[in-house]
Length: 144
Image (cartoon, rainbow, N blue to C red; front, top):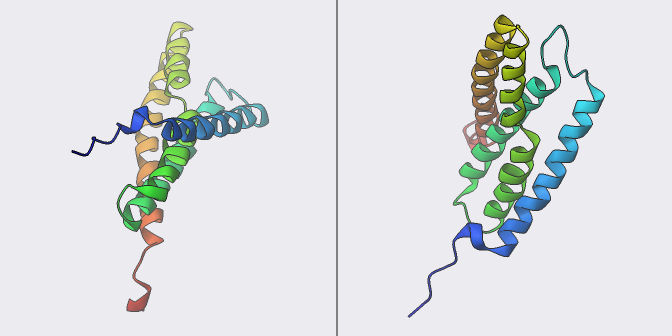
């Protein structure tokens, strides 16, 4: 009898890949937060930009990987490193939520609502755009 494979989240190599990607994603987010203004006219620019960029990158990555084949082997390792690790650490839902709450608490409800709605809507749009770009990388070139 063959023993069942360990679940992915219990495999040391998978955890190491997520950790490594997370270290890189966190460092990139920190660098961007230092490089661009945190807030412009009450709007949390850094977090907003990071989350939209991360949604786009994740869309490109996952669509590209899905079109290349099954989520196994090297593709799975890339997904864990770049998708779960890097994009997961690069984007920041918790900071987004905290900023929205702080804006509300400080009496900036219209900005908080606009920030919340636009982050979710434009984040979905950025992910969709990433999927389109990822799909375009696999257009049948022989049809031309």
